[in-house]
Image 1 (tube, helix red, strand yellow):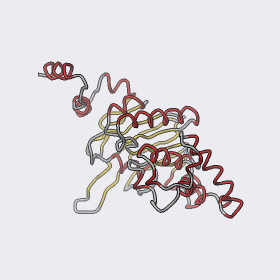
Image 2 (cartoon, helix red, strand yellow):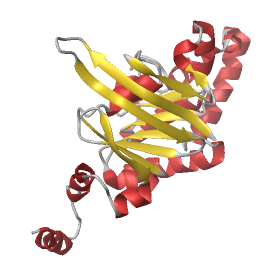
Image 3 (cartoon, rainbow, N blue to C red):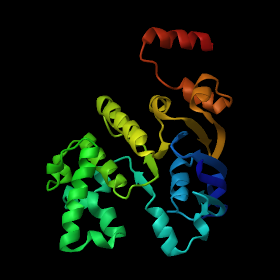
Amino acid sequence: MTLLELDHLRKEFGGRPPHVAVDDVSLTVAEGQTLALVGESGCGKTTLTRLLLRLLEPTAGSVRFDGQDLGALSPARLRSVRRQMQVVLQDPYSSMNPRMRITDIVAEPLVTHDPQARGRRGRARTRERVGELLESVGLPAGIQDRYPHEFSGGQRQRVSIARALALEPRLVVLDEPTSALDVSVQAQVLDLLADLQRRLGLTYVLVSHNLAVVRQVADRVAVMRQGRLVEVGDAADVFRDPQHPYTRQLLDAVPLPDPRRARRARTEAV
């Protein structure tokens, strides 16, 4: 079943001539799938995710979520649909108010979207729910009264994931979710995301420049260059037999951990 459909999306920013950040992009994402958007910095990946979340209005084209055209929805209906679309950002610390306790950070979506989460009785239920969310991402419920600066980068990213799950979304946009973490912590967070996807049936759109991460987690890959899609396909096919020269350039630029393999690859390329 198709959950997300992008149809001829285009986004221009001011200027004469205008800067075209996203140019005629069409994509579909099936429910339960992980689609990775890859490409060099400035190619339009992040702008595209802002469009699909309707944080930006497209210059042309449409976004359909579960069959609904987001551009045609009333504000009230869009607010309801937005519960089902959440995001995890690259730097968890920058997305948190350092003066807020963890319980308030994770509860923020609940308080915003659910009137029953407010008031004395609502706060008690919300605190219980926050504890459940923290435990679901591998953190103890007892950390609720602590502040973001008291945690490591990996722990803060787990808090961000817990917050994204608070409204039980169907789609989660992962914008470079592991790039600010060291390699060992990256692996733990990726394992967590994979486990949550299996248990909750989540659909992911992953933005990443790390092709090793993409190879590990993606079902499909969409390669962007200068605002356009140059290649889309199953991850295994794209990595095994890339069709576009730009995709081959990206794969050739991935460093090999074995120096002998790296030297052999350079020799074969000559």
